Length: 190
Image (cartoon, rainbow, N blue to C red; front, top):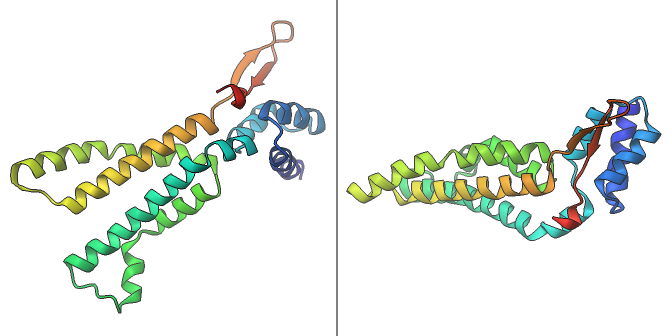
């Protein structure tokens, strides 16, 4: 029960605009039974109000790229195959459920998702290089290239936000007690 209470208290304090370090210190005193490492990990993946405001435009751009990618998948199928505008259920099969869930998780600022979405999409650069060489040789598929570019853009923005908003806390050891001390960077200085 204390884990759930600590998480909800963390969300509440971060919602008030309190920095992560101060929230961490307050929660350590209020919930001493929660291990500091677990608490630091929870806080790492929770955005502060300051970060939400500072990176709002970039976050919205990321969501717009995901929507554009989904729309391009649908348009490609409409223009190149037998999917017609009156087949509503066919559209649901064109957009993978994983894309919808990923978009929803990113919309809600779920920090754990940003990094793996970033790396998963940035790896698409290898496919882009292959597609570009095919495009130069014999005119490859522009739909594929545009999809790859959107994927790489999604990955780059997600990794940037993961690094800026959900950075790992620095772990210091107290020289006297040997206890680990988790130090979150001050977002206003970054």
